[in-house]
Amino acid sequence: MTTTIALVGRPNVGKSTLFNYLTRSRDALVVDQPGVTRDRKYGIARYKTQSFLIIDTGGVTDQISGISELMNKQVKLAITEANIILFIVDGSEGLSSLDEMIADQLRYSQKLIKLVVNKVERKNQQPIVTDFYQLGLGDPVIISARQRLGIDVLIDSLPIDQEEEENESIPTKGIQFAILGRPNVGKSTLVNRLLGEERMITFDEPGTTRDSIAVSFIRNNQRYTLIDTAGIRRRSKIFDVLEKFSVVKAIETIKIAQVAILVIDACDSLVEQDLHLAGLILESGKAVIIAVNKWDKASDYQQQRLKANLNRRLPFLDFARVHFISALHGKGVDQLFPSIDESYQAASCHLSTGALNQALAAATAAHPLPLIRGRQIKLRYAHQGGENPPKIIIHGNQTESMPDHYKRYLIRYFRDQFSLVGTPIKLEFKTTQNPYKDRVNILTQHQLKKRKRIIKDRKSNY
Image 1 (cartoon, rainbow, N blue to C red):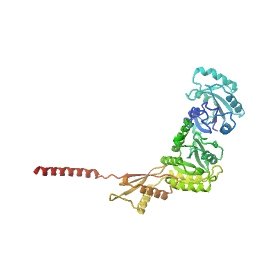
Image 2: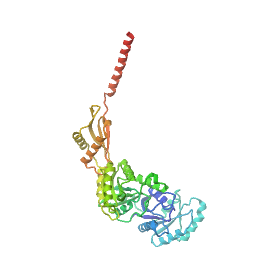
Image 3: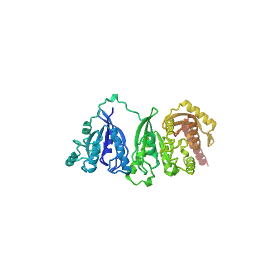
Image 4: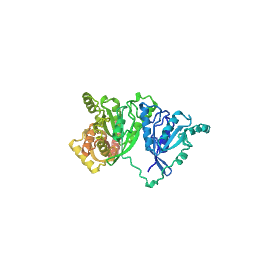
């Protein structure tokens, strides 16, 4: 059984910094500001021949209302799941009353508790460490997560189950899909509904989710990795440094995911930021699904207006499945998984060269190629050049002059022919070089020189 370790402590004591070091990643958002982490974040840590599951948590506070209460609930869930609790305290500030309150709460967990004094970079801070003996949790381990000091001693002091790496099975991430959208459109509520548990903090306040959270799960024998992201606002409205980092991580998530679910608020219709996010997803080449949330709250007029706007303002995503859902009540949410599977399979499909050439010949026969300066464009053969998204390379003559409307026609034809639903298709045209082109140019230049010489001789004779 894999050992599970939870990082617990008050806000801004360095839990996320330690999490990133142990997992050898930058998954946890680290900003010199308390209250950055809110939801539980899981990661696999490896040390020498040992591996264990580690949980980063939000800072525990003494507030019993609002979002702090929900954060404390997430911490309690992490404590319940863990075998070992690393109680992180701040050695630069010394013992606080909040540390004493947290220590009293941890005693009731009946779990192994290890006291860790972080942010001890200088030797003159050693006298401050002695104050933490008052907590009655044994000898503290002194570390500096930022400077990577004392962490080896900390891991060696933990009773981590010894497991041979060759017997370990590292689970694959499966289909990775990200939930994207503006703030307060119901992304975290949708995540909780998809997972069937209160995995993410949901609060009636924009910007509740600050970091990108990845959760792996299995449904119908298919493994998925769901990534919840922070809401992305327009750049001109972002002033907080923390929000800027959150938006950057959310945009980076698009590159990691294989399928993107764009969540739109049915009550707000379609705004410019929704179009901007749709453009980012399209530029990344990821498969995409549109989920219109809060459909049960929208009036008949709002529903009709939104459907009209989807057709009028998002024609470049006409290949995406559109689902009208209610994440709060679960209406239509289960239908997202078939679309996720369909979009992923379409984006990663393999297209044989023979089938592509047959489709290309049928497309050009049904709709002949246009004439360019009196000469007809010729498309000779096609083959697949990549996946995620499918990339089709077409060779021919004068392909650089191919009109955009004919490119769109070919994309639609290939999409219908191979049932490529939910994924963009990229076309690349390559013009076959004329082997006589350079020779013709040389002859033409020679003829021009000869003609000039003849004209010059005639003038001299006069």
